[in-house]
Length: 282
Image 1 (cartoon, rainbow, N blue to C red):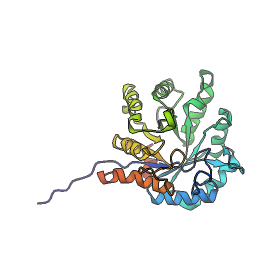
Image 2: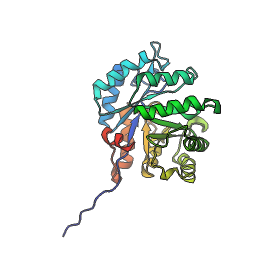
Image 3: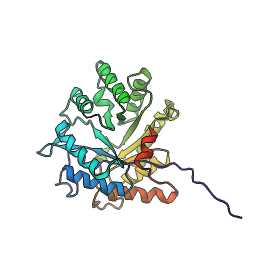
Image 4: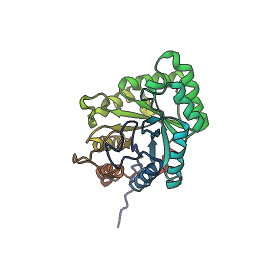
């Protein structure tokens, strides 16, 4: 007599954040900047298990851009390389350059499949709530999946208040917990996740059906991602925040960082989901 065991662990989403707003080829030769480099990276990371790419683009001088004219060729190149096999998420990060009105205008113009928005940037004070609420609800209605970026437990509480008041829609979005953003040396550890989850559960958000993910800094990035996955979340990995493998060696490329995460969790019966499954989570 044989007994079959069904693995009930759900798939986890791996997003790659391959470049960020500030790093260049001087930081790593394989950090993708041009549309062709981003397309190659997207293909490599898809093969390594990614279901999403978090996209930053640059101006001709390699500085951070939210300009439609800089985003459009990069999005087209990635889409040509991977089709619909990756969700393309655009950043709205200000980097001290862009005001909320400009951040909003870019997403309205491009209408991407997904976009990340920092609550601190888009809702910096109560006076900004009307404009932010209009934008957030437009995203929900337009099918642009928002990922609200939260930097600490206080951000979690602010997010909960904005959601309860209707500024942020009740559903149709994700959140991202940024681990260790203000730690000494800007390094992260799995324990950094605990204050986020304590606030999340205290506020009853663990029962709200909102998916969450983490990103982390430094060589424990893969450990932080593994902790998140084991606790029911997802992970964003890549050169934007970290270039080191768990060994402390410099990763040869973004795909190697994704494989390091999978080494930690796939042997336990978990597996990364594809883009179609990721779309079904929201």
